[in-house]
Image 1: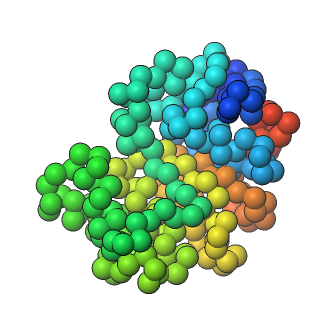
Image 2: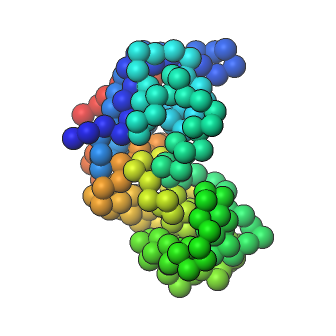
Length: 223
């Protein structure tokens, strides 16, 4: 199995404070991994480092989707991020635009120009997340679970090899959270690599997968 993420001896700092040190791990193609740990343990910093929002301080190797993060140039960042789908806990949908307009905004921002192609791609990703009849809805007209499905659809628009989901069930009721985790596992089974941060250890037991834990400024693999 080839790796989409490979870190060796990586150190991550924020505001000159060491957050994680000597981080070494990899994520394979189509692999699902959980990322767990207490608030402030470095989960978000680790995830943000993968799409170059938090710089890597040092390391032997920091490779994401073939991009060397240790020597990444600013002009390369948009291309790296285009191949990563990001799912946020707080949705971050544009509240003054419909579902279709939210998705088309992302496509236009990432270089899509042909309207027919964009419409087809939006239809495809909404079908993937079971929201094919909701494109005309405004975000406030949707439940929390429906909004999170739209966020996952948004993350899928450019068919990313890697999906980073930061507490995607944190604002959802338990049953809806199960639905979202099931969907993310299905995406991994379809070939997307998925890294999901969560505080809900019950989900890790109910939907088993590899578990990485941030603790004491280290990343520990749990089996």
